[in-house]
Image (cartoon, rainbow, N blue to C red):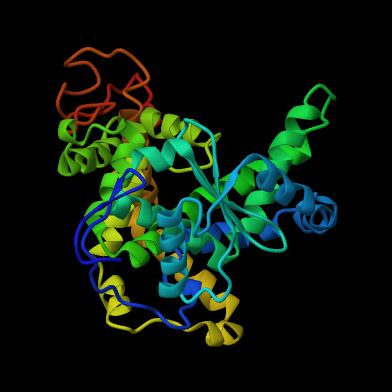
Length: 379
Protein backbone atom coordinates (compact mmCIF):
# COMPACT_ATOMS: atom_id res chain seq x y z
CA UNK A 1 0.00 0.00 0.00
CA UNK A 2 1.30 3.42 -0.85
CA UNK A 3 2.01 5.97 1.84
CA UNK A 4 -0.24 8.44 0.02
CA UNK A 5 -4.00 8.29 0.38
CA UNK A 6 -5.77 7.51 -2.90
CA UNK A 7 -9.04 6.25 -4.30
CA UNK A 8 -9.25 2.56 -5.14
CA UNK A 9 -12.42 0.98 -6.50
CA UNK A 10 -14.47 3.68 -4.81
CA UNK A 11 -12.84 3.13 -1.39
CA UNK A 12 -10.56 5.62 0.25
CA UNK A 13 -7.28 4.09 1.36
CA UNK A 14 -5.58 5.46 4.46
CA UNK A 15 -1.82 5.92 4.78
CA UNK A 16 -0.05 2.66 5.59
CA UNK A 17 1.01 2.14 9.17
CA UNK A 18 2.82 -0.48 11.11
CA UNK A 19 0.63 -3.10 12.72
CA UNK A 20 1.79 -5.87 15.00
CA UNK A 21 1.83 -9.45 13.75
CA UNK A 22 1.09 -12.44 16.01
CA UNK A 23 3.12 -15.46 14.85
CA UNK A 24 1.67 -18.81 15.94
CA UNK A 25 -1.16 -17.17 17.88
CA UNK A 26 -3.76 -19.52 19.32
CA UNK A 27 -7.43 -18.63 19.05
CA UNK A 28 -7.44 -18.96 22.86
CA UNK A 29 -5.73 -15.58 22.94
CA UNK A 30 -8.84 -13.73 21.81
CA UNK A 31 -11.72 -16.13 22.46
CA UNK A 32 -14.36 -14.71 24.79
CA UNK A 33 -14.85 -16.90 27.90
CA UNK A 34 -18.57 -17.09 27.17
CA UNK A 35 -17.73 -18.52 23.72
CA UNK A 36 -15.81 -21.41 25.27
CA UNK A 37 -18.47 -22.05 27.92
CA UNK A 38 -21.29 -22.09 25.37
CA UNK A 39 -19.32 -24.47 23.14
CA UNK A 40 -18.73 -26.85 26.06
CA UNK A 41 -22.46 -26.75 26.87
CA UNK A 42 -23.32 -27.32 23.20
CA UNK A 43 -21.13 -30.41 22.95
CA UNK A 44 -22.77 -31.83 26.07
CA UNK A 45 -26.26 -31.41 24.61
CA UNK A 46 -27.98 -34.77 24.22
CA UNK A 47 -27.92 -35.94 20.61
CA UNK A 48 -25.56 -33.23 19.37
CA UNK A 49 -22.63 -35.57 18.66
CA UNK A 50 -24.88 -37.89 16.66
CA UNK A 51 -26.33 -35.04 14.59
CA UNK A 52 -22.91 -33.47 14.12
CA UNK A 53 -21.30 -36.67 12.83
CA UNK A 54 -24.24 -37.41 10.54
CA UNK A 55 -24.36 -33.92 9.04
CA UNK A 56 -20.60 -33.74 8.63
CA UNK A 57 -20.90 -36.55 6.10
CA UNK A 58 -24.15 -35.48 4.48
CA UNK A 59 -23.88 -31.73 4.03
CA UNK A 60 -23.24 -30.78 0.38
CA UNK A 61 -19.81 -29.19 0.86
CA UNK A 62 -18.94 -29.34 -2.84
CA UNK A 63 -22.36 -27.97 -3.76
CA UNK A 64 -21.83 -25.04 -1.38
CA UNK A 65 -18.55 -24.12 -3.04
CA UNK A 66 -20.01 -24.47 -6.54
CA UNK A 67 -22.90 -22.24 -5.54
CA UNK A 68 -20.67 -19.33 -4.58
CA UNK A 69 -18.32 -19.98 -7.48
CA UNK A 70 -21.22 -19.77 -9.94
CA UNK A 71 -23.33 -16.99 -8.45
CA UNK A 72 -20.91 -14.66 -6.60
CA UNK A 73 -17.68 -12.81 -7.36
CA UNK A 74 -14.52 -14.46 -6.07
CA UNK A 75 -12.08 -11.99 -4.53
CA UNK A 76 -8.66 -12.01 -6.20
CA UNK A 77 -5.98 -9.72 -7.60
CA UNK A 78 -8.29 -9.12 -10.55
CA UNK A 79 -11.60 -8.74 -8.66
CA UNK A 80 -12.12 -6.64 -5.51
CA UNK A 81 -8.34 -6.34 -5.24
CA UNK A 82 -8.57 -4.12 -2.15
CA UNK A 83 -10.50 -6.86 -0.31
CA UNK A 84 -7.96 -9.44 -1.47
CA UNK A 85 -5.16 -7.32 0.03
CA UNK A 86 -7.08 -7.07 3.32
CA UNK A 87 -7.70 -10.81 3.39
CA UNK A 88 -4.06 -11.73 2.86
CA UNK A 89 -3.01 -9.09 5.37
CA UNK A 90 -5.44 -10.45 7.99
CA UNK A 91 -4.18 -14.00 7.46
CA UNK A 92 -0.60 -12.73 7.77
CA UNK A 93 -1.28 -10.89 11.04
CA UNK A 94 -3.10 -13.85 12.65
CA UNK A 95 -0.66 -16.31 11.02
CA UNK A 96 -3.38 -18.34 9.29
CA UNK A 97 -1.40 -20.68 7.06
CA UNK A 98 -3.93 -21.08 4.22
CA UNK A 99 -5.81 -18.06 2.91
CA UNK A 100 -9.51 -19.04 2.66
CA UNK A 101 -11.41 -18.22 -0.54
CA UNK A 102 -13.53 -15.10 -0.25
CA UNK A 103 -16.64 -14.15 -2.25
CA UNK A 104 -18.74 -11.02 -2.66
CA UNK A 105 -22.44 -11.79 -2.92
CA UNK A 106 -25.08 -9.42 -4.27
CA UNK A 107 -27.25 -8.54 -1.27
CA UNK A 108 -28.17 -5.05 -0.03
CA UNK A 109 -28.27 -6.33 3.56
CA UNK A 110 -24.87 -5.70 5.23
CA UNK A 111 -23.59 -9.11 6.29
CA UNK A 112 -20.57 -11.39 6.32
CA UNK A 113 -20.08 -15.03 7.24
CA UNK A 114 -17.50 -17.77 7.44
CA UNK A 115 -18.87 -21.21 6.52
CA UNK A 116 -17.63 -24.60 5.35
CA UNK A 117 -16.86 -28.02 6.82
CA UNK A 118 -13.61 -29.17 5.22
CA UNK A 119 -12.27 -25.68 4.59
CA UNK A 120 -13.69 -22.27 5.52
CA UNK A 121 -15.20 -19.91 2.94
CA UNK A 122 -15.67 -16.20 3.66
CA UNK A 123 -18.65 -14.41 2.10
CA UNK A 124 -19.37 -10.67 2.33
CA UNK A 125 -22.38 -8.91 0.85
CA UNK A 126 -22.33 -5.91 -1.44
CA UNK A 127 -24.34 -4.04 1.20
CA UNK A 128 -21.44 -4.38 3.64
CA UNK A 129 -18.75 -3.54 1.07
CA UNK A 130 -20.58 -0.35 0.11
CA UNK A 131 -21.29 0.65 3.72
CA UNK A 132 -17.83 0.49 5.32
CA UNK A 133 -14.62 2.41 4.69
CA UNK A 134 -11.26 0.65 4.39
CA UNK A 135 -10.31 0.49 8.08
CA UNK A 136 -13.83 -0.57 9.10
CA UNK A 137 -13.79 -3.26 6.42
CA UNK A 138 -10.36 -4.42 7.58
CA UNK A 139 -11.83 -5.14 11.01
CA UNK A 140 -14.68 -7.13 9.41
CA UNK A 141 -12.28 -9.22 7.31
CA UNK A 142 -10.20 -9.84 10.44
CA UNK A 143 -13.42 -10.83 12.23
CA UNK A 144 -14.13 -13.51 9.60
CA UNK A 145 -10.52 -14.74 9.58
CA UNK A 146 -10.84 -15.06 13.36
CA UNK A 147 -13.86 -17.33 12.81
CA UNK A 148 -11.74 -19.43 10.43
CA UNK A 149 -8.83 -19.68 12.88
CA UNK A 150 -11.17 -20.70 15.71
CA UNK A 151 -12.84 -23.39 13.61
CA UNK A 152 -16.24 -21.72 13.90
CA UNK A 153 -17.15 -22.31 10.24
CA UNK A 154 -18.11 -25.95 10.86
CA UNK A 155 -20.74 -25.16 13.52
CA UNK A 156 -21.98 -22.13 11.59
CA UNK A 157 -22.61 -24.32 8.53
CA UNK A 158 -24.53 -26.85 10.59
CA UNK A 159 -26.59 -24.05 12.16
CA UNK A 160 -27.58 -22.75 8.70
CA UNK A 161 -28.55 -26.25 7.57
CA UNK A 162 -30.53 -27.11 10.71
CA UNK A 163 -32.38 -23.79 10.65
CA UNK A 164 -33.52 -24.55 7.11
CA UNK A 165 -34.38 -28.14 8.04
CA UNK A 166 -36.45 -27.02 11.05
CA UNK A 167 -38.59 -24.87 8.76
CA UNK A 168 -39.14 -27.77 6.39
CA UNK A 169 -40.34 -30.19 9.07
CA UNK A 170 -42.29 -27.66 11.14
CA UNK A 171 -45.59 -29.09 9.85
CA UNK A 172 -44.82 -32.52 11.37
CA UNK A 173 -46.13 -32.84 14.98
CA UNK A 174 -43.06 -32.75 17.26
CA UNK A 175 -40.96 -33.15 14.12
CA UNK A 176 -38.74 -30.19 14.82
CA UNK A 177 -38.59 -30.23 18.64
CA UNK A 178 -35.23 -32.02 18.80
CA UNK A 179 -33.85 -29.98 15.91
CA UNK A 180 -34.91 -26.69 17.50
CA UNK A 181 -33.26 -27.67 20.79
CA UNK A 182 -29.96 -28.03 18.96
CA UNK A 183 -30.60 -24.88 16.88
CA UNK A 184 -31.25 -22.89 20.07
CA UNK A 185 -28.01 -24.16 21.63
CA UNK A 186 -26.10 -23.42 18.42
CA UNK A 187 -27.48 -19.88 18.31
CA UNK A 188 -26.49 -19.29 21.92
CA UNK A 189 -22.95 -20.45 21.12
CA UNK A 190 -22.78 -18.47 17.88
CA UNK A 191 -23.81 -15.23 19.58
CA UNK A 192 -20.90 -15.71 21.98
CA UNK A 193 -18.53 -16.65 19.16
CA UNK A 194 -19.26 -13.27 17.56
CA UNK A 195 -17.71 -11.58 20.59
CA UNK A 196 -14.55 -13.63 20.02
CA UNK A 197 -14.44 -12.76 16.32
CA UNK A 198 -14.90 -9.05 17.12
CA UNK A 199 -11.73 -9.31 19.17
CA UNK A 200 -9.92 -10.98 16.27
CA UNK A 201 -11.06 -8.10 14.04
CA UNK A 202 -9.51 -5.63 16.47
CA UNK A 203 -6.24 -7.58 16.48
CA UNK A 204 -6.13 -7.33 12.69
CA UNK A 205 -7.25 -3.71 12.32
CA UNK A 206 -5.61 -2.49 15.55
CA UNK A 207 -7.88 0.55 15.45
CA UNK A 208 -10.62 0.40 18.07
CA UNK A 209 -12.26 3.56 16.72
CA UNK A 210 -12.68 1.96 13.29
CA UNK A 211 -14.16 -1.16 14.91
CA UNK A 212 -16.64 1.02 16.81
CA UNK A 213 -17.54 2.94 13.66
CA UNK A 214 -18.18 -0.28 11.75
CA UNK A 215 -20.55 -1.60 14.40
CA UNK A 216 -22.29 1.76 14.59
CA UNK A 217 -22.80 1.82 10.81
CA UNK A 218 -24.23 -1.70 10.85
CA UNK A 219 -26.75 -0.45 13.41
CA UNK A 220 -27.58 2.95 11.91
CA UNK A 221 -26.34 3.10 8.32
CA UNK A 222 -23.83 5.32 6.56
CA UNK A 223 -24.60 8.58 8.36
CA UNK A 224 -21.54 9.08 10.54
CA UNK A 225 -22.07 12.83 10.70
CA UNK A 226 -25.36 12.08 12.47
CA UNK A 227 -23.87 9.58 14.96
CA UNK A 228 -21.48 9.63 17.90
CA UNK A 229 -19.51 6.67 19.28
CA UNK A 230 -19.76 7.81 22.92
CA UNK A 231 -23.53 8.26 22.64
CA UNK A 232 -23.77 4.87 20.94
CA UNK A 233 -21.93 3.22 23.83
CA UNK A 234 -24.22 4.97 26.32
CA UNK A 235 -27.09 3.14 24.64
CA UNK A 236 -25.43 -0.12 25.67
CA UNK A 237 -25.24 1.07 29.29
CA UNK A 238 -28.88 2.12 29.22
CA UNK A 239 -29.87 -1.21 27.66
CA UNK A 240 -28.05 -3.19 30.35
CA UNK A 241 -29.10 -1.19 33.39
CA UNK A 242 -32.56 0.04 32.42
CA UNK A 243 -35.93 -1.31 33.49
CA UNK A 244 -36.87 -3.99 35.98
CA UNK A 245 -36.93 -7.79 36.00
CA UNK A 246 -39.63 -7.83 33.36
CA UNK A 247 -37.28 -6.01 30.98
CA UNK A 248 -34.53 -8.50 31.79
CA UNK A 249 -36.80 -11.35 30.74
CA UNK A 250 -37.78 -9.49 27.57
CA UNK A 251 -34.10 -9.00 26.70
CA UNK A 252 -33.59 -12.77 26.88
CA UNK A 253 -36.66 -13.46 24.74
CA UNK A 254 -35.64 -10.83 22.18
CA UNK A 255 -32.15 -12.26 21.69
CA UNK A 256 -33.12 -15.97 21.50
CA UNK A 257 -34.00 -16.04 17.77
CA UNK A 258 -30.91 -14.02 16.79
CA UNK A 259 -27.57 -15.37 15.57
CA UNK A 260 -25.72 -12.17 16.56
CA UNK A 261 -25.68 -10.20 19.81
CA UNK A 262 -27.20 -6.73 19.71
CA UNK A 263 -24.80 -4.25 18.10
CA UNK A 264 -24.53 -1.89 21.08
CA UNK A 265 -23.69 -4.87 23.32
CA UNK A 266 -20.94 -5.97 20.91
CA UNK A 267 -19.48 -2.46 20.87
CA UNK A 268 -19.46 -2.23 24.68
CA UNK A 269 -17.88 -5.69 25.05
CA UNK A 270 -15.16 -4.89 22.52
CA UNK A 271 -14.35 -1.53 24.12
CA UNK A 272 -14.09 -3.20 27.52
CA UNK A 273 -11.63 -5.78 26.15
CA UNK A 274 -9.59 -3.12 24.29
CA UNK A 275 -9.06 -1.32 27.60
CA UNK A 276 -8.16 -4.49 29.52
CA UNK A 277 -4.77 -5.68 30.73
CA UNK A 278 -5.21 -8.91 28.74
CA UNK A 279 -5.39 -6.96 25.49
CA UNK A 280 -2.34 -4.90 26.38
CA UNK A 281 -0.33 -8.03 27.20
CA UNK A 282 -1.39 -9.56 23.90
CA UNK A 283 -0.29 -6.46 21.98
CA UNK A 284 3.04 -6.65 23.82
CA UNK A 285 3.56 -10.15 22.41
CA UNK A 286 2.49 -12.23 25.42
CA UNK A 287 -0.16 -14.66 24.19
CA UNK A 288 -0.83 -18.43 24.04
CA UNK A 289 0.63 -20.22 21.02
CA UNK A 290 -1.07 -22.71 18.73
CA UNK A 291 1.54 -25.38 19.41
CA UNK A 292 0.53 -25.30 23.09
CA UNK A 293 -3.15 -26.04 22.39
CA UNK A 294 -2.71 -29.81 22.74
CA UNK A 295 -1.52 -29.32 26.31
CA UNK A 296 -4.45 -27.14 27.30
CA UNK A 297 -6.74 -28.58 29.96
CA UNK A 298 -10.43 -28.50 29.06
CA UNK A 299 -11.23 -28.39 32.77
CA UNK A 300 -9.03 -25.34 33.27
CA UNK A 301 -10.64 -23.58 30.30
CA UNK A 302 -14.10 -24.29 31.66
CA UNK A 303 -13.06 -23.06 35.12
CA UNK A 304 -11.76 -19.81 33.61
CA UNK A 305 -15.01 -19.37 31.71
CA UNK A 306 -17.06 -19.99 34.86
CA UNK A 307 -14.97 -17.44 36.76
CA UNK A 308 -15.50 -14.89 34.00
CA UNK A 309 -19.26 -15.49 34.04
CA UNK A 310 -19.34 -15.04 37.83
CA UNK A 311 -17.39 -11.80 37.55
CA UNK A 312 -19.71 -10.50 34.81
CA UNK A 313 -22.80 -11.33 36.86
CA UNK A 314 -21.35 -9.60 39.91
CA UNK A 315 -20.49 -6.42 38.00
CA UNK A 316 -23.58 -6.37 35.77
CA UNK A 317 -26.13 -3.58 36.09
CA UNK A 318 -28.94 -5.70 34.65
CA UNK A 319 -31.76 -6.12 37.23
CA UNK A 320 -31.90 -9.90 36.78
CA UNK A 321 -28.13 -10.27 37.06
CA UNK A 322 -28.19 -8.12 40.21
CA UNK A 323 -30.81 -10.44 41.68
CA UNK A 324 -28.70 -13.50 40.79
CA UNK A 325 -25.70 -11.85 42.42
CA UNK A 326 -27.74 -11.07 45.54
CA UNK A 327 -28.95 -14.66 45.76
CA UNK A 328 -25.38 -15.91 45.50
CA UNK A 329 -24.34 -13.43 48.17
CA UNK A 330 -27.20 -14.37 50.50
CA UNK A 331 -28.86 -10.96 50.38
CA UNK A 332 -31.77 -10.51 52.75
CA UNK A 333 -35.34 -9.52 51.92
CA UNK A 334 -35.18 -11.56 48.70
CA UNK A 335 -38.96 -11.74 48.36
CA UNK A 336 -39.23 -7.99 48.59
CA UNK A 337 -36.49 -7.57 45.99
CA UNK A 338 -38.26 -9.85 43.52
CA UNK A 339 -41.59 -8.09 44.14
CA UNK A 340 -40.10 -4.65 43.66
CA UNK A 341 -38.16 -5.85 40.63
CA UNK A 342 -41.36 -6.78 38.85
CA UNK A 343 -42.99 -3.48 39.81
CA UNK A 344 -45.09 -4.94 42.62
CA UNK A 345 -47.76 -7.59 42.37
CA UNK A 346 -50.54 -5.27 43.47
CA UNK A 347 -51.46 -1.63 43.19
CA UNK A 348 -50.92 -0.67 46.80
CA UNK A 349 -51.30 2.95 47.72
CA UNK A 350 -48.88 5.01 49.79
CA UNK A 351 -49.24 4.22 53.45
CA UNK A 352 -50.63 0.77 52.71
CA UNK A 353 -48.10 -2.01 53.23
CA UNK A 354 -45.45 0.48 54.14
CA UNK A 355 -44.42 3.87 52.81
CA UNK A 356 -44.32 4.79 49.16
CA UNK A 357 -40.54 5.21 49.18
CA UNK A 358 -39.39 2.45 51.48
CA UNK A 359 -39.64 -1.34 51.11
CA UNK A 360 -43.12 -2.80 51.70
CA UNK A 361 -43.64 -4.37 55.10
CA UNK A 362 -46.44 -6.51 56.48
CA UNK A 363 -46.59 -4.74 59.86
CA UNK A 364 -44.97 -1.56 61.15
CA UNK A 365 -41.64 -2.48 62.77
CA UNK A 366 -42.52 -0.71 66.04
CA UNK A 367 -45.88 -2.40 66.52
CA UNK A 368 -47.01 -5.96 67.22
CA UNK A 369 -50.02 -7.42 65.39
CA UNK A 370 -53.24 -7.56 67.44
CA UNK A 371 -53.55 -10.67 69.57
CA UNK A 372 -56.72 -11.80 67.81
CA UNK A 373 -55.10 -11.51 64.39
CA UNK A 374 -52.59 -14.20 63.40
CA UNK A 375 -49.31 -12.83 62.01
CA UNK A 376 -49.02 -13.04 58.19
CA UNK A 377 -46.29 -14.99 56.49
CA UNK A 378 -43.57 -13.00 54.76
CA UNK A 379 -43.60 -12.75 50.95
